[in-house]
Amino acid sequence: DFFREADHFSFLTTNVLPKLSSEGKKTLKFWSAGCSSGEEPYTIAIVLKEFMKSNVGIIHNFSIKGTDISTKVLEKAVNAVYDINSIANLPLDIKKGYFLKSSDSTKKIVRVKPEIRSYCSFSRLNFMDPTYCINDTFQVIFCRNVLIYFDKETQEAIIRKLLNHLEIDGYLFLGHSETIFSMNILLENVAPAVYKKIGSIKRL
Image (cartoon, rainbow, N blue to C red; front, side, top):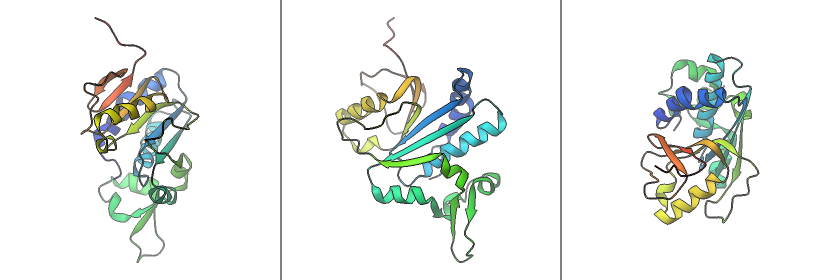
């Protein structure tokens, strides 16, 4: 869904983006790991554009990488065509600002506008690969509602591989039903299902 677990996008707007921009980061890189058919990366792009409109000059540019194991859903993500009901609950200004209706009135579909699509790229990735062939680091990684399909040991291994591509002080968003409890990982919980990568374990 677009804007699924909406409190995450509120936290992104009110906490993460101001923090990153205050650190002088003008170009931001996001990774939607397990992006499925693209709703999540496009939602992130919309949130970023809305933030830039309200905070002119703070962020100059951004990019969002979406990955998934399924080439079928990735094809849908690239096409960015969705059932019109998928945006039914979005505010009118978001619908008008970022989606196009079909010129054929019999087709109840919308397409994400080209500008938003231009910020997003998609490629195939298998979480079970020993390493992830991604030559980039990100300030924010979303990996939501994917880890629930793996056992605890595999979850920890996946998170460690994700963190290899997350900057120190970068943010990892998990699904609300997912947790890193009992994992020995350099992450600090900063909000429900939101974690910040730290450089070392803090000793009391």
